[in-house]
Image (tube, rainbow, N blue to C red; front, side, top):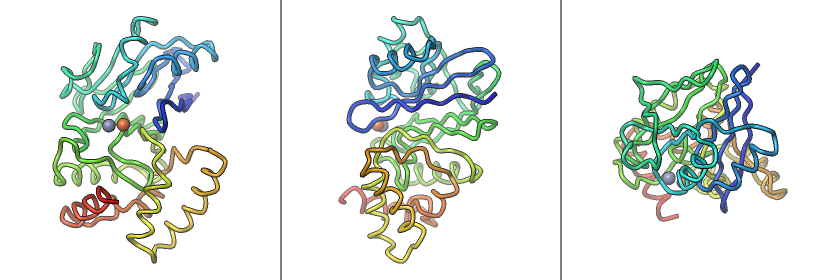
Length: 241
Ligand code: ZN
Ligand code: FE
């Protein structure tokens, strides 16, 4: 049986994710900005949260940590690099210390740039990657702490994920990202085609996340940038967009 994944929309545009590993019954919540929504989503399904998984330290990904931990006694898992900035952290993970989750496992991909300690949880067998605010659907996170070199290197790491990997990111930013991408590359038919779907979904308030790595490789300007210099230019343009 595969990992069960439930998207939990929080605040204006944040996504947290409930993960249930069916063999062990363990339940994780990825990047809870607040506690109430995730606790209710778990309770509605009769699930007991056993883990919080954090991709990076920002409050809109960790704000619910302590309340969820005191309500459930769960284990808080986060990047070793940022251990001092993750509220309530119990277990530090890194590329050398993957996250074992019942009968499955997440490999950790170190992807600094948005923050210096940012990681992705990659469930290889389940073809699912939780990438926080590093890679968005047709976009990437702002460089709050890292350099363009760092973020470009992180993009290259993520690009190695197989095309059929589902990319679960931290925010619903796709409409804005896609309009920026169309303006940047008006001749790109793959972006236009994808945007038809994005407009249709957003008109019904449906999520555009997750996406597949294969479509990101064809339509995400930050993955399409061939070198650091062009990556930095696209990032700077997007910052002013
Ligand atoms: Zn962030
Ligand atoms: Fe965020």
